Length: 98
Image 1 (cartoon, rainbow, N blue to C red):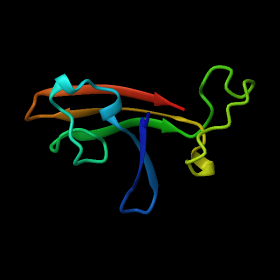
Image 2 (tube, rainbow, N blue to C red):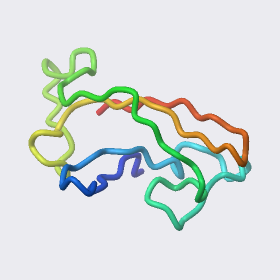
Image 3 (cartoon, rainbow, N blue to C red):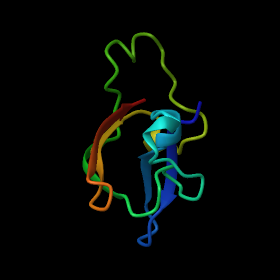
């Protein structure tokens, strides 16, 4: 399961965004394999907040090591936001912790 993608922004910083193809049902008719987030073209993603720290309850005491594929600064964290399409008149609220 791949819930997150790392996207290189023009500024050179890495930004984690969710991969909606693992979260939403194909019946929702808003999924596409042509975008990094898995949503059809035309969706805008707005990040409301994110932080690179262990936010999983008991995560440090349970020895959660973080994802091996992520850079050290992003081993733990959360990100929340929304994705919206004015054409589809749909808003998707989301949050991911790791």
